[in-house]
Each structure stands twice: as structure tokens, then as C-alpha cells.
Length: 277
Image 1 (cartoon, helix red, strand yellow):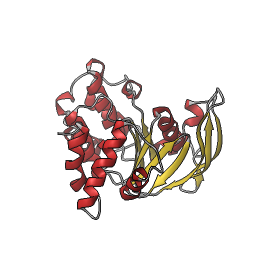
Image 2 (cartoon, one colour):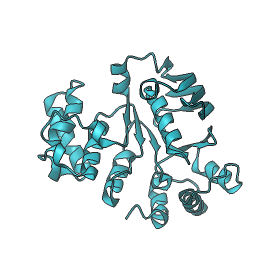
Image 3 (cartoon, rainbow, N blue to C red):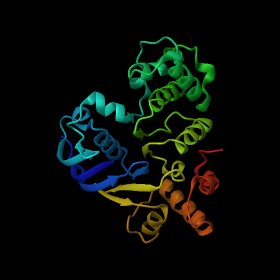
Image 4 (cartoon, helix red, strand yellow):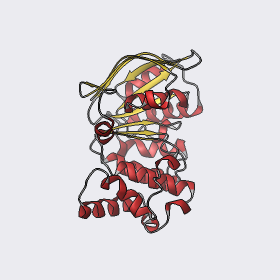
């Protein structure tokens, strides 16, 4: 469980990015972070992963973030990264450069945390199949396309099965099949998932909670239904086309179903997003 208490972040120029945020992310939550500003979403992802002081040392940070009742900044970095994995959008920064095959690159994540070799082989083979990149197993990561490297980076992080998986702009570089395969993996993921993406309708069928960042303030909605109500009543004035599509399609889905879930939601989302087959 992650608890955020009166968290604020001001950039090096004195401009507020997030102001006085307090909320809780519960175990097994699927949380979508929705914002006009990708910078705000990324800042929040870094804060939840416990790396904001390192990635933005000039930002002024106030308040507290706790992971399982311990200050996230005080948890040893090795212990923290075993429990909370942050997958940044720039896949080049996640490729180690020390392995000459994709299979070895993905396996490295498990080797570093002491997983048995036979278990590593089985889990790497499984994730390659899940992401439909088995054909890349013997390829050199340095010779892959941007999209292929992104999939390998995602695989190397997801395969660790952390308690909290934070995905920042995961749809970047992914084609239709890549998005669909990632969605299939995340639906069966046992831990907590936090996703910040400029295309929120892709993940709305997966999410059970929504964190909205609007004018540096955060509001949390505990269901798609309450989010839709706020959008419809203009409690949060979000005007981007993607938000409009999210609102309309989730509203239409909820009119047909008492509860929103991936099975019922995805057909409606496919119609508007153009991102899914």
C-alpha cells in the first residue's frame, strides 16, 4: 500500500507541479493517472516510485509518501526496486548493454535478484510468448527497432513481478498488437498497477481507480462511474479529444452494464481509440 500525505512538488523555476496531494493506492489497485500535462504525470510516477529526489534534485518537495507504512525515501534502494518497479518511456535507458541477446537481456533482471536458472528460462520464455516477441530471442538488443527495444524493456521489468508496477507512457512505440498483448498481461497481474499515459482510454477498461491531475491539484475517483459523473457535471473541466472519447465510451458502457470491467469495456473503447483491433 502506498500512502501519499500532503505531497507537493515545485520545479526549479518556482512553478508548482503538484500541490497538497493526499491519497492511498491499495494493494492490487489498477490506477490510471490522467492529466493534461505528461510532466505532472511523470513527476507523480517518480514520487510514487521513490526516485523523485534523484531524478529531479532541484525540485522542492514537501509532504510524505509511505510504502507499507515506511517512508519511501528511507527504504534501501535495492529493497525498494525489488518491490516497486518504474518503467520509464525511454526504453534505451532500460537496456543494460551487457547482454548480446534479447533472451539474455530479459533474463538479467531475474539473475540480479537471485532467481534460479531453470525458473529464469521458463519465465523468460513465457513473457516472450505473451508479448509476441519470441522471434527476437536470439537477436542483439542493439540491433532492434525502437518499438522492439521498448517491448524488450517492458518484458525485463514486468518479468520481475514486483508488488507495484508503475508504467509511464507504456503505449509509446507500441503498435496495435503490442498494446493488446500488454493489456492481456496486465489483466492477470497480481500486484498493484499504476499507469500514466497520454491515451487514457486505452487503459480505462483495466483501471478500477483514477487519479486526475488538473491545475496542479489531484482528485481521486474510486470508480469509472464517479469519474464519468465528474466529467459530465464539469467538476473537472477536461477538454482534450481523448478525454472526450473516454467520457463518452465509458458512459455508454456503464449504461449497459452495472459494473465496468475489461470484458465489457474493451469493445466500446476499441471504437473510439483506434488503438486496439
